[in-house]
Amino acid sequence: MSDEVNEPGMHHATAEGEVPTEMRTADQSLKAGSVGVIGVVFLVVTGAAPIAAMLFNGPLTVLGAGWAAPASFILTLIGLVVFTVGYVQMARRVNAAGGFYTFISHGLGKVLGLASACTVMFAYVMFACQQQGVSGYWLSTTFDNWFGVSIPGWLLVFVAIAITVGISYFEVKITARILGVALCAEVIMLTILGIVILLKGGANGISLEPLNPVKVFDGNANSATAVFGSAAAGIALFGAYFSWTGFEMAPNYAEESRHPARTVGPATYGSVIGVGILYIFVMWMFVEGWGTEHVSHAVALQLGAVPGHALPNEYGSAFYPVTDRYVGHWMTIIYEGLIITSSFAAGIAFYSTASRYVFSMAREDILPSFLGKTREGAQNPWRASLAVGCVMVVYCTLFILSDSSTLAQLTKTSTYGALMGVFALLAIQGVCCIAIIWFFWKHATDGFHWWKTVIAPILGCAAMIFGCQQMLANLGALAGGEPLFVKLIPWVSLAIFSFGFVLALYWRSQKKDRYEAIGRFVDINVEGELPAGRAGDEPAVASAG
Image (tube, rainbow, N blue to C red):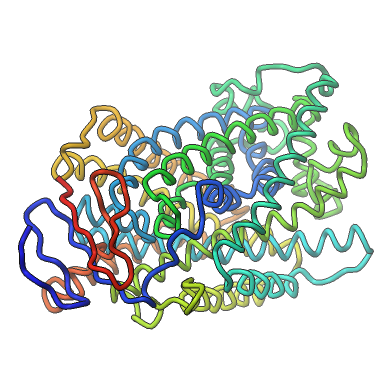
């Protein structure tokens, strides 16, 4: 390593294969030691929002795969576990709030890194925005069921935004505690329902057929075609994958965790596998609760997809008749309450991650630097958070002006944004897989492993490409039509990626300092421990190879 002494704010010169780090001031550092493994798991898993995933995404998987919906979760779990193998290896080497962006910058270079940063940031801002529509819808329908009070869903969308921004303004530790309580209640209630259905034998006895992955691709066999008029594995896989969205958030909290290298791996694997087992079991019992011959029809009544049906939907969720039948109406009431807290929990988790992407990029002068400052004392990215909050207001306002109905907050404000975000994220996860392979092949050769850093990332990349292809092939069915917003989904992602790509090339040519900052505001250590350098200290720099 060079002995050159650098001024604060400058990059350390390093020998080939070493990764420079950026000097931090006190208001550019996230609060270290804020959360442990359990806290990170809560923050990550609540992004998946188990009850929201089951009550909204679960029926969506039935729409695509009929009674084989549980098997679509099995396929998705396999793909995500394989992806996670290489992802965790990279996360143990590079700790920063930038996640994918930082990994790709170190693996494939700053140009692709900045392009990916713009795309991932956009995806998570979309997730944060669309989740407000979900919260508004469930608030409205639940209040109507409980109190007979009809409050417009669009109005409650703005209430959801205000609560999300307000809660996230405080320390990440406080947010983790709030989300943790909601998460525990969700898991307990879902598990109780599943166990009761299992013990009672479902509608017609318990069958293993819904767990057969082959049936996901056979619409004639799984009843989807007979009930909905068509079937598409792509719809089922989208619904399943979206249920996990946020599983990769753990590295974004590395700076704020107590032992980053020891936290990221368990938190990521625990999140992916833990919620995966829960999803598969609950969806299996949901199908068995209705019976394979009735579950698709039940979902059709929820979604208003039965020809000639007079109402937009028969009930808020196809889960409610199941909880009524197998446990009691008291559980239905609890589910109606938990879907509200679950939606808020997911919104907060997505909002927090989006804010950290904005913060990370602003801290490196990619976005306006004032967004890369933390709040004194709490050291959370409050300026970046408020900026994301403003975007949420604009996004939701535009959708509400287009269609202010309560149902539209779920089927349009939420669904369209989710489609946009998932496509962008799948594409970047594929790029990240390639970055992992190249990083360990060229730079961190001491960590090279034939399975963890080669085969697993290759298989992960293939899974992401397949997911993108399936989404594109089924966009119209997923959105219930092809409005301009939906048609533009792949092109908007490509445009944002291209913008970052061109901007990086411009900086490389004209603004060397900014170019060198891309993806380098990071702690890195080949031994797996976070360097001692913190705010006000000399950053530790270790060789990546």
